[in-house]
Amino acid sequence: MAALRKIIFSGLGLLALTVALCVGCAKPRISNERKVFGVPHTWKSGPLTLDELKPFENAAAFKPVNKVAKLPDEILALCFHEGVLAKMADPGGKWEVSDAITDESLPNHRLIWSATDGTHYVVYYELGGIGHSFHIVLATLEPGKTNPALDWHAAAPENLVNYGDFLAALKAGKLDNSLDFGR
Image (cartoon, rainbow, N blue to C red; front, side):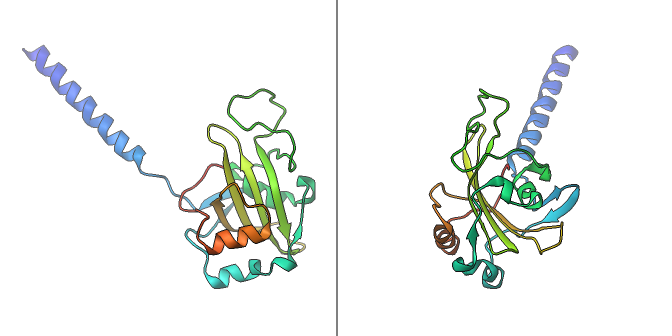
């Protein structure tokens, strides 16, 4: 009888522990901080205010940057987990879209397009892995500085063809930065 009671109580304890762990895991871990080259950066959660959007509103001021090599490393690092600079393919370049790796030399990020006015950057890219996703990063890097401000990061729809599409999606609330998306 004592052995049976021990099994029941240990089973209940294990069940309670499992439920507690599952409930704890079910809550999304929302974070708006990451390290870039070892320096903590934070970005805004939620939609941008009109004042925060102002530097990015003038589409004519933003010129395309269609090669990864032409983006500052400090801006590119904001697109990667923990700000550890990794490889990103150029638009249309070969990359690993899924988690079924066929060529370890290929990156799992690919630039779709980016633009800058010389200080503010918008980087729209796709991320491969278990789930193929699209992301957009808004950042500010003052000329001559090496410490960028990550203004905003969001999951994005896959059909942002150009800067105008980005602005329209942003103003329509179609970009989601409610979770700490994998980068």
